Length: 359
Image 1: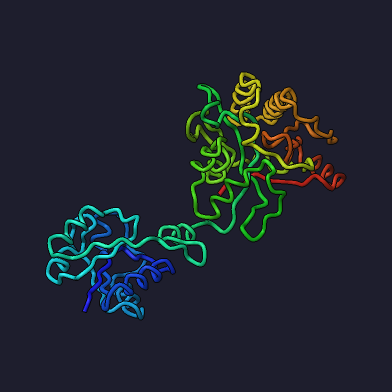
Image 2: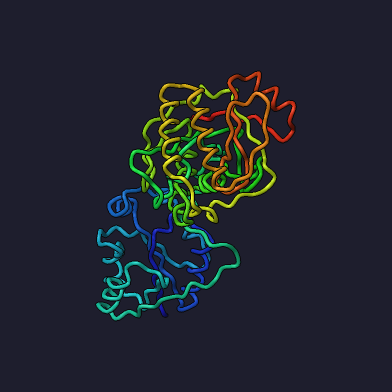
């Protein structure tokens, strides 16, 4: 009888595990599966398993391709099953090609004369998952805010960051979900940051790798009316709930998508962007709608000088600017009172009211 041995955490059993067990079992006549105990997981990874050891053992024992299940309790990295292996002397230790403990496992096999066998990861019939990915998915929120920015856009792009400057933005409602996205896409409202959050991801590294900045996932995760320090990574200077903005904001769809990565290195006046960001910071600190309007107007002048089209005039608005940096998407309009905002929205079907969101 040829005895096959595999090991892992198998914290949340998924189709990828079943495929691995099937392929390993096909190499012999008897399959033993070992998984790291709760104590080992805590000792090496400082986390608890998704289910208690006894339950996990029963689940694995119920799989038709598995003949035996053991719980690894040794504290050797990657070899929590070491004592069992030395005593039982299986014929073959099977691993996936991305195994992290190849060296120590091969050395253990040599001690007992076992074969060390790598299995190539064959493409599954559907999108592969991991236990950690499942945990992220389960913990992800069902809804997310989007965001509008008042000043400092582009200063969150690491290569364009400036000492002493800021990024001032606000998380907004209505909320979005993976099933209900009641805004235009590619619209300058931080949709990629919301998408990352809803899928259980951080999003900041993804945005920077795209060649853009970190402000979208940062404010969407933080929520509130936020002032960030311009820099290589998000650093919150301070935030407010956004009460000063209730009833005073609306957005207008310009009719065309924007493309932030495509415009990230266009020529623009970063000195004036930084100036607007400092003014916006003071506005939030003092809760001054007038100063905030001035910072928005200054940001808009920079956008116009970059070649963006002039925005439509909306009666009674006190300031306006594009929400994103990609020559399209939504534009923000600021009003000094709720009645003026609501009147403008009722008179313009392309204009929709938004509110600050702070959890």
